[in-house]
Image (cartoon, rainbow, N blue to C red; front, side):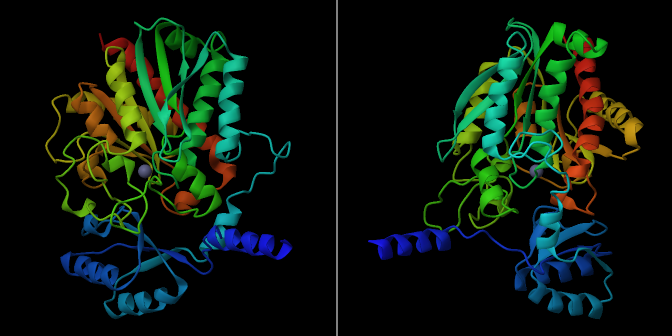
Length: 417
Ligand SMILES: [Zn+2]
Protein backbone atom coordinates (compact mmCIF):
# COMPACT_ATOMS: atom_id res chain seq x y z
CA UNK A 1 0.00 0.00 0.00
CA UNK A 2 2.77 2.35 0.99
CA UNK A 3 4.59 1.57 -2.25
CA UNK A 4 1.44 2.25 -4.20
CA UNK A 5 1.07 5.59 -2.52
CA UNK A 6 4.65 6.43 -3.30
CA UNK A 7 4.21 5.50 -6.94
CA UNK A 8 1.05 7.57 -7.15
CA UNK A 9 2.77 10.50 -5.54
CA UNK A 10 5.71 10.20 -7.90
CA UNK A 11 3.40 10.02 -10.90
CA UNK A 12 1.58 13.22 -9.95
CA UNK A 13 4.86 14.97 -9.26
CA UNK A 14 6.14 14.04 -12.68
CA UNK A 15 2.87 14.97 -14.35
CA UNK A 16 2.78 18.43 -12.86
CA UNK A 17 6.46 19.32 -12.73
CA UNK A 18 6.67 23.02 -13.53
CA UNK A 19 8.54 24.19 -16.61
CA UNK A 20 12.07 25.42 -15.95
CA UNK A 21 13.75 28.09 -18.01
CA UNK A 22 17.39 27.61 -17.11
CA UNK A 23 19.72 29.36 -19.56
CA UNK A 24 16.81 30.41 -21.75
CA UNK A 25 17.33 33.82 -23.24
CA UNK A 26 15.21 36.69 -24.45
CA UNK A 27 16.76 38.31 -27.48
CA UNK A 28 15.96 41.59 -29.24
CA UNK A 29 16.52 42.03 -32.95
CA UNK A 30 15.56 44.93 -35.17
CA UNK A 31 15.45 43.73 -38.79
CA UNK A 32 16.50 46.62 -41.03
CA UNK A 33 14.87 45.56 -44.30
CA UNK A 34 12.81 42.86 -46.01
CA UNK A 35 15.86 40.67 -46.43
CA UNK A 36 16.51 40.65 -42.69
CA UNK A 37 12.81 40.00 -42.06
CA UNK A 38 13.00 36.87 -44.17
CA UNK A 39 16.15 35.78 -42.34
CA UNK A 40 14.15 36.10 -39.11
CA UNK A 41 11.31 34.08 -40.61
CA UNK A 42 13.68 31.30 -41.58
CA UNK A 43 15.17 31.25 -38.10
CA UNK A 44 11.67 30.96 -36.66
CA UNK A 45 10.97 28.03 -38.95
CA UNK A 46 14.07 26.11 -37.90
CA UNK A 47 14.01 26.91 -34.19
CA UNK A 48 11.48 26.98 -31.43
CA UNK A 49 11.13 30.69 -30.80
CA UNK A 50 8.55 32.11 -28.43
CA UNK A 51 7.70 35.60 -29.64
CA UNK A 52 7.21 38.16 -26.89
CA UNK A 53 6.88 41.12 -29.22
CA UNK A 54 5.19 41.03 -31.65
CA UNK A 55 3.15 38.00 -30.61
CA UNK A 56 3.93 35.91 -33.71
CA UNK A 57 6.54 35.72 -36.46
CA UNK A 58 3.92 36.70 -39.06
CA UNK A 59 3.81 40.20 -37.63
CA UNK A 60 7.54 40.80 -37.81
CA UNK A 61 8.27 43.68 -40.18
CA UNK A 62 11.23 45.82 -41.15
CA UNK A 63 12.24 48.39 -38.52
CA UNK A 64 10.22 46.66 -35.81
CA UNK A 65 11.74 45.84 -32.45
CA UNK A 66 11.38 42.06 -32.13
CA UNK A 67 11.74 40.23 -28.81
CA UNK A 68 11.75 36.45 -28.60
CA UNK A 69 12.60 33.70 -26.14
CA UNK A 70 14.91 30.88 -27.12
CA UNK A 71 16.60 27.98 -25.35
CA UNK A 72 20.28 28.33 -24.44
CA UNK A 73 21.11 25.51 -26.85
CA UNK A 74 19.29 26.97 -29.83
CA UNK A 75 20.66 30.41 -29.09
CA UNK A 76 24.09 29.44 -30.34
CA UNK A 77 22.91 28.74 -33.87
CA UNK A 78 20.67 31.83 -33.81
CA UNK A 79 23.63 33.91 -32.71
CA UNK A 80 25.88 32.68 -35.49
CA UNK A 81 23.15 33.20 -38.09
CA UNK A 82 22.62 36.76 -36.88
CA UNK A 83 26.36 37.42 -36.87
CA UNK A 84 26.79 35.95 -40.33
CA UNK A 85 24.11 38.23 -41.69
CA UNK A 86 25.44 41.22 -39.76
CA UNK A 87 22.20 41.67 -37.89
CA UNK A 88 22.44 43.56 -34.66
CA UNK A 89 20.95 41.88 -31.59
CA UNK A 90 20.75 42.46 -27.90
CA UNK A 91 20.33 39.92 -25.11
CA UNK A 92 17.55 41.33 -22.94
CA UNK A 93 17.50 38.41 -20.52
CA UNK A 94 20.43 36.06 -20.21
CA UNK A 95 18.95 33.47 -17.87
CA UNK A 96 15.17 33.49 -17.82
CA UNK A 97 14.86 31.23 -14.79
CA UNK A 98 16.88 33.67 -12.70
CA UNK A 99 14.79 36.58 -13.92
CA UNK A 100 11.59 34.70 -13.01
CA UNK A 101 12.85 34.26 -9.46
CA UNK A 102 14.06 37.85 -9.27
CA UNK A 103 10.68 39.35 -10.03
CA UNK A 104 9.58 38.56 -6.46
CA UNK A 105 11.75 41.32 -5.07
CA UNK A 106 9.30 42.74 -2.53
CA UNK A 107 9.28 41.14 0.89
CA UNK A 108 5.93 40.00 2.24
CA UNK A 109 4.77 42.21 5.07
CA UNK A 110 2.61 39.43 6.44
CA UNK A 111 3.39 36.01 4.97
CA UNK A 112 0.57 34.56 2.87
CA UNK A 113 -1.45 37.76 2.82
CA UNK A 114 -2.69 39.65 -0.24
CA UNK A 115 -0.55 42.67 -1.05
CA UNK A 116 -0.85 45.45 -3.62
CA UNK A 117 2.93 45.62 -3.83
CA UNK A 118 3.21 41.96 -4.81
CA UNK A 119 1.84 39.63 -7.44
CA UNK A 120 -1.06 37.65 -5.97
CA UNK A 121 -2.07 34.16 -7.00
CA UNK A 122 -5.67 33.29 -7.86
CA UNK A 123 -6.64 32.11 -4.36
CA UNK A 124 -5.49 35.37 -2.87
CA UNK A 125 -7.34 37.34 -5.52
CA UNK A 126 -10.61 35.47 -4.83
CA UNK A 127 -10.28 36.13 -1.09
CA UNK A 128 -9.49 39.75 -1.92
CA UNK A 129 -12.71 40.16 -3.97
CA UNK A 130 -14.66 39.08 -0.87
CA UNK A 131 -12.74 41.47 1.30
CA UNK A 132 -13.44 44.40 -1.02
CA UNK A 133 -17.19 43.73 -0.82
CA UNK A 134 -17.09 43.36 2.99
CA UNK A 135 -15.11 46.54 3.40
CA UNK A 136 -17.16 48.72 1.04
CA UNK A 137 -20.65 47.21 0.89
CA UNK A 138 -22.17 50.47 -0.34
CA UNK A 139 -19.67 50.84 -3.10
CA UNK A 140 -18.48 47.41 -4.22
CA UNK A 141 -20.44 44.32 -5.22
CA UNK A 142 -19.30 41.05 -6.74
CA UNK A 143 -21.01 39.53 -9.76
CA UNK A 144 -20.31 36.03 -11.03
CA UNK A 145 -20.62 36.27 -14.81
CA UNK A 146 -19.82 32.65 -15.57
CA UNK A 147 -17.13 30.07 -15.13
CA UNK A 148 -14.03 28.97 -16.96
CA UNK A 149 -13.18 25.78 -18.84
CA UNK A 150 -11.80 24.32 -15.60
CA UNK A 151 -14.84 25.54 -13.71
CA UNK A 152 -13.28 28.43 -11.86
CA UNK A 153 -15.60 31.39 -11.23
CA UNK A 154 -15.36 34.55 -13.33
CA UNK A 155 -15.92 37.46 -10.97
CA UNK A 156 -16.58 41.08 -11.82
CA UNK A 157 -16.38 43.75 -9.17
CA UNK A 158 -18.85 46.53 -9.68
CA UNK A 159 -17.82 49.83 -8.17
CA UNK A 160 -20.39 52.56 -7.77
CA UNK A 161 -23.88 53.20 -6.47
CA UNK A 162 -26.69 50.77 -7.11
CA UNK A 163 -28.31 52.73 -9.95
CA UNK A 164 -28.06 50.65 -13.13
CA UNK A 165 -29.08 53.46 -15.45
CA UNK A 166 -25.90 55.39 -14.93
CA UNK A 167 -23.03 55.49 -17.39
CA UNK A 168 -20.42 52.82 -16.86
CA UNK A 169 -16.96 51.74 -17.93
CA UNK A 170 -16.03 48.09 -18.39
CA UNK A 171 -12.42 47.14 -17.62
CA UNK A 172 -10.68 43.79 -17.83
CA UNK A 173 -7.25 42.54 -16.84
CA UNK A 174 -5.34 39.33 -17.38
CA UNK A 175 -6.77 38.12 -20.70
CA UNK A 176 -3.21 36.91 -21.36
CA UNK A 177 -2.00 34.78 -18.48
CA UNK A 178 1.68 35.71 -18.40
CA UNK A 179 1.05 39.47 -18.20
CA UNK A 180 0.97 39.60 -14.40
CA UNK A 181 1.19 43.35 -14.06
CA UNK A 182 -2.27 43.57 -15.63
CA UNK A 183 -4.32 41.87 -12.84
CA UNK A 184 -2.14 43.77 -10.35
CA UNK A 185 -3.45 47.00 -11.86
CA UNK A 186 -7.13 45.95 -11.72
CA UNK A 187 -6.73 45.15 -8.02
CA UNK A 188 -5.07 48.48 -7.41
CA UNK A 189 -7.83 50.28 -9.32
CA UNK A 190 -10.66 48.73 -7.28
CA UNK A 191 -8.84 49.42 -4.02
CA UNK A 192 -8.05 53.02 -4.86
CA UNK A 193 -11.46 53.82 -6.33
CA UNK A 194 -13.40 52.38 -3.38
CA UNK A 195 -11.07 53.86 -0.78
CA UNK A 196 -10.88 57.37 -2.21
CA UNK A 197 -14.63 57.85 -2.64
CA UNK A 198 -15.58 60.75 -0.40
CA UNK A 199 -11.93 61.70 0.05
CA UNK A 200 -10.51 62.39 -3.38
CA UNK A 201 -12.46 65.09 -5.23
CA UNK A 202 -12.13 63.72 -8.75
CA UNK A 203 -12.82 60.10 -7.82
CA UNK A 204 -15.85 61.13 -5.77
CA UNK A 205 -17.22 63.11 -8.68
CA UNK A 206 -16.67 60.21 -11.07
CA UNK A 207 -18.25 57.61 -8.76
CA UNK A 208 -21.18 59.90 -7.99
CA UNK A 209 -22.10 59.71 -11.61
CA UNK A 210 -20.81 56.47 -13.05
CA UNK A 211 -20.09 52.79 -12.34
CA UNK A 212 -17.09 50.62 -13.14
CA UNK A 213 -17.27 46.94 -13.95
CA UNK A 214 -13.86 45.45 -13.29
CA UNK A 215 -12.88 41.91 -14.26
CA UNK A 216 -9.59 41.48 -12.37
CA UNK A 217 -8.64 38.20 -14.06
CA UNK A 218 -10.22 37.33 -17.42
CA UNK A 219 -8.21 34.18 -18.12
CA UNK A 220 -8.35 32.54 -14.70
CA UNK A 221 -7.27 29.03 -15.75
CA UNK A 222 -4.31 30.39 -17.69
CA UNK A 223 -3.36 32.64 -14.78
CA UNK A 224 -3.35 29.70 -12.37
CA UNK A 225 -1.27 27.69 -14.87
CA UNK A 226 1.24 30.54 -15.15
CA UNK A 227 1.68 30.40 -11.35
CA UNK A 228 1.86 26.66 -10.92
CA UNK A 229 3.23 25.15 -14.13
CA UNK A 230 4.47 27.50 -16.80
CA UNK A 231 5.30 31.10 -16.01
CA UNK A 232 5.22 32.01 -19.70
CA UNK A 233 1.74 30.55 -20.42
CA UNK A 234 -0.55 32.90 -22.37
CA UNK A 235 -3.75 31.19 -23.59
CA UNK A 236 -6.66 29.70 -21.67
CA UNK A 237 -6.59 25.98 -20.80
CA UNK A 238 -9.33 24.47 -22.95
CA UNK A 239 -8.69 21.21 -24.78
CA UNK A 240 -8.52 21.30 -28.56
CA UNK A 241 -10.06 18.53 -30.67
CA UNK A 242 -7.59 16.64 -32.83
CA UNK A 243 -4.62 18.37 -31.27
CA UNK A 244 -2.36 17.70 -28.34
CA UNK A 245 -1.90 21.43 -27.90
CA UNK A 246 -3.96 23.15 -25.24
CA UNK A 247 -5.59 26.56 -25.16
CA UNK A 248 -7.03 29.42 -27.19
CA UNK A 249 -5.86 33.02 -27.28
CA UNK A 250 -8.96 34.66 -25.82
CA UNK A 251 -8.01 37.94 -27.44
CA UNK A 252 -8.39 36.34 -30.91
CA UNK A 253 -11.66 34.62 -30.01
CA UNK A 254 -14.08 37.56 -30.23
CA UNK A 255 -16.61 37.80 -33.01
CA UNK A 256 -15.06 40.51 -35.11
CA UNK A 257 -13.19 39.78 -38.30
CA UNK A 258 -12.51 36.46 -36.57
CA UNK A 259 -11.52 34.49 -39.68
CA UNK A 260 -9.56 37.25 -41.43
CA UNK A 261 -6.11 36.35 -40.20
CA UNK A 262 -4.85 33.08 -41.70
CA UNK A 263 -2.16 32.64 -39.06
CA UNK A 264 -4.43 32.08 -36.11
CA UNK A 265 -5.82 28.66 -37.01
CA UNK A 266 -3.09 26.47 -35.49
CA UNK A 267 -3.98 25.19 -31.98
CA UNK A 268 -0.27 24.86 -31.22
CA UNK A 269 0.33 28.58 -31.70
CA UNK A 270 -0.01 31.10 -28.90
CA UNK A 271 -2.30 33.17 -31.14
CA UNK A 272 -4.79 30.35 -31.81
CA UNK A 273 -8.25 31.88 -32.33
CA UNK A 274 -10.28 28.83 -31.25
CA UNK A 275 -12.69 26.69 -33.30
CA UNK A 276 -15.34 29.44 -33.58
CA UNK A 277 -15.98 33.00 -32.39
CA UNK A 278 -16.86 32.96 -28.67
CA UNK A 279 -16.12 29.22 -28.56
CA UNK A 280 -14.42 29.73 -25.19
CA UNK A 281 -16.45 29.93 -22.00
CA UNK A 282 -14.45 32.92 -20.80
CA UNK A 283 -14.99 34.95 -23.99
CA UNK A 284 -18.67 34.01 -24.09
CA UNK A 285 -19.24 35.07 -20.48
CA UNK A 286 -17.60 38.46 -20.99
CA UNK A 287 -19.33 39.05 -24.34
CA UNK A 288 -22.74 38.15 -22.84
CA UNK A 289 -22.18 40.49 -19.91
CA UNK A 290 -21.16 43.40 -22.11
CA UNK A 291 -24.08 42.79 -24.49
CA UNK A 292 -26.56 42.78 -21.63
CA UNK A 293 -25.13 46.02 -20.17
CA UNK A 294 -24.66 47.79 -23.47
CA UNK A 295 -27.14 50.51 -22.58
CA UNK A 296 -24.89 51.83 -19.84
CA UNK A 297 -21.36 50.98 -21.02
CA UNK A 298 -19.68 54.03 -22.57
CA UNK A 299 -16.09 52.83 -22.59
CA UNK A 300 -14.18 49.55 -22.64
CA UNK A 301 -10.60 49.37 -21.39
CA UNK A 302 -8.41 46.28 -21.53
CA UNK A 303 -5.04 45.93 -19.79
CA UNK A 304 -2.08 44.07 -21.24
CA UNK A 305 1.67 44.18 -21.05
CA UNK A 306 4.26 44.99 -22.23
CA UNK A 307 5.56 47.85 -24.46
CA UNK A 308 4.07 51.07 -23.00
CA UNK A 309 1.37 51.81 -25.56
CA UNK A 310 -2.15 53.12 -25.42
CA UNK A 311 -4.00 51.53 -28.30
CA UNK A 312 -7.41 51.96 -29.87
CA UNK A 313 -9.29 50.49 -32.90
CA UNK A 314 -8.83 49.08 -35.36
CA UNK A 315 -6.64 46.02 -35.08
CA UNK A 316 -7.97 44.11 -38.07
CA UNK A 317 -7.67 46.87 -40.65
CA UNK A 318 -5.51 49.92 -41.28
CA UNK A 319 -8.67 51.92 -41.96
CA UNK A 320 -9.40 54.50 -39.30
CA UNK A 321 -12.63 54.42 -37.28
CA UNK A 322 -15.10 57.32 -37.70
CA UNK A 323 -14.13 58.93 -34.39
CA UNK A 324 -10.39 58.51 -34.86
CA UNK A 325 -9.63 62.14 -34.00
CA UNK A 326 -11.51 61.86 -30.75
CA UNK A 327 -9.80 58.59 -29.76
CA UNK A 328 -6.39 59.98 -30.65
CA UNK A 329 -7.05 63.06 -28.55
CA UNK A 330 -8.05 61.02 -25.49
CA UNK A 331 -5.00 58.79 -25.95
CA UNK A 332 -2.65 61.75 -26.40
CA UNK A 333 -3.83 63.50 -23.24
CA UNK A 334 -4.09 60.19 -21.36
CA UNK A 335 -0.46 59.29 -22.10
CA UNK A 336 0.62 62.86 -21.27
CA UNK A 337 -1.10 62.67 -17.91
CA UNK A 338 0.43 59.24 -17.28
CA UNK A 339 3.93 60.58 -17.88
CA UNK A 340 3.57 63.39 -15.34
CA UNK A 341 4.16 61.05 -12.42
CA UNK A 342 7.40 59.23 -13.27
CA UNK A 343 8.10 60.46 -16.81
CA UNK A 344 7.16 57.06 -18.24
CA UNK A 345 6.84 57.47 -21.99
CA UNK A 346 4.00 55.82 -23.87
CA UNK A 347 3.20 55.88 -27.55
CA UNK A 348 -0.40 55.74 -28.76
CA UNK A 349 -2.41 55.02 -31.90
CA UNK A 350 -4.56 52.43 -33.68
CA UNK A 351 -3.53 48.82 -32.92
CA UNK A 352 -2.83 47.81 -36.52
CA UNK A 353 -0.40 50.64 -37.29
CA UNK A 354 1.06 51.24 -33.81
CA UNK A 355 1.61 47.62 -32.74
CA UNK A 356 0.64 45.06 -35.38
CA UNK A 357 -2.55 43.71 -37.02
CA UNK A 358 -4.85 41.56 -34.88
CA UNK A 359 -8.14 39.83 -35.60
CA UNK A 360 -10.87 38.83 -33.16
CA UNK A 361 -9.66 41.19 -30.43
CA UNK A 362 -11.90 42.29 -27.58
CA UNK A 363 -11.17 45.94 -28.37
CA UNK A 364 -12.39 45.82 -31.96
CA UNK A 365 -15.34 43.70 -30.92
CA UNK A 366 -16.48 46.14 -28.21
CA UNK A 367 -16.11 48.96 -30.70
CA UNK A 368 -18.17 47.06 -33.28
CA UNK A 369 -20.99 46.78 -30.72
CA UNK A 370 -21.20 50.56 -30.60
CA UNK A 371 -18.94 51.33 -27.62
CA UNK A 372 -17.19 54.30 -29.14
CA UNK A 373 -14.35 54.62 -26.66
CA UNK A 374 -12.34 51.45 -26.45
CA UNK A 375 -8.70 51.36 -25.36
CA UNK A 376 -6.00 48.84 -24.59
CA UNK A 377 -3.08 49.64 -22.35
CA UNK A 378 0.18 47.82 -22.91
CA UNK A 379 1.67 48.48 -19.50
CA UNK A 380 5.36 48.61 -18.49
CA UNK A 381 8.00 48.02 -19.48
CA UNK A 382 9.61 48.37 -22.89
CA UNK A 383 11.43 45.03 -22.77
CA UNK A 384 14.16 45.15 -20.13
CA UNK A 385 12.02 42.79 -18.03
CA UNK A 386 9.17 42.20 -20.47
CA UNK A 387 6.55 39.98 -18.83
CA UNK A 388 8.74 39.64 -15.74
CA UNK A 389 8.39 43.15 -14.38
CA UNK A 390 9.76 43.04 -10.81
CA UNK A 391 7.31 43.53 -7.98
CA UNK A 392 9.20 46.62 -6.88
CA UNK A 393 7.75 48.35 -9.98
CA UNK A 394 4.12 47.37 -9.43
CA UNK A 395 3.09 50.38 -7.37
CA UNK A 396 4.63 53.02 -9.59
CA UNK A 397 3.15 51.34 -12.67
CA UNK A 398 -0.30 51.30 -11.04
CA UNK A 399 -0.10 54.88 -9.84
CA UNK A 400 0.79 56.34 -13.22
CA UNK A 401 -1.78 54.16 -15.03
CA UNK A 402 -4.45 55.28 -12.57
CA UNK A 403 -3.92 58.88 -13.70
CA UNK A 404 -4.63 57.97 -17.31
CA UNK A 405 -7.70 55.88 -16.43
CA UNK A 406 -9.12 58.66 -14.29
CA UNK A 407 -8.63 61.07 -17.16
CA UNK A 408 -10.46 58.73 -19.55
CA UNK A 409 -13.33 58.37 -17.04
CA UNK A 410 -13.63 62.14 -16.66
CA UNK A 411 -13.60 62.55 -20.43
CA UNK A 412 -16.36 59.93 -20.82
CA UNK A 413 -18.49 61.70 -18.21
CA UNK A 414 -18.17 64.99 -19.97
CA UNK A 415 -18.27 63.97 -23.61
CA UNK A 416 -20.72 61.11 -23.94
CA UNK A 417 -24.46 61.37 -23.68
ZN1 LIG B 1 -1.72 40.77 -23.94
